[in-house]
Image (cartoon, rainbow, N blue to C red):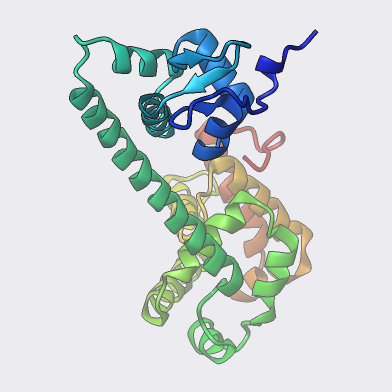
Length: 276
């Protein structure tokens, strides 16, 4: 059977300078159950009781409750709070300085996280920060600005798209021009290597495969396994084959073989490679 002393109701016999558990809880903004618990474990014991068993909290008790709330907000466990308040050997100032340093570090980490989220939100909204006209001017007349939206629709939930979006957000038109120039130079060297009869597994071909991976890193971190998956798409999707074979007949298949050979040299089986 629950006694009146456990309900938090007021007791008419309490002195004006003392508060019953219900009034104390309301004053400091915590629950009666919390004060009961703190009493049981010795964190805050009320200094008085009424004849019927009600807890009575003095002004000093309320001050102690406020100190407990401050320590708890700082992340101290209740057992340590009780020790801080009751053990004269404990250096409360040193403990608070330590906790302050931890809070400052936590705030810094949270600010970094907020900044990263803000960048990702902006990047997701903006994607490539170039107008359609600027994209065509940089990437050539055969560039279709709609490809960016199509790619987002297809891969927008992938970690690689998140990397692309964040990296693209901070790039200037000049930086995009540099990437486009490097890509054009790579394609010219790729076609020249095929034209000269280079073997797909030659050191020169392997170097071209690594140049391709480096170019892809402007957009996302491209592993050898991911590069194999891209090479498969070069064959499977007509747009890629048309582009590469226009540079040099048979270049699409040769480029795929180059990527496969380089992946195999780096311990990746092209037949079982996955997007990872």
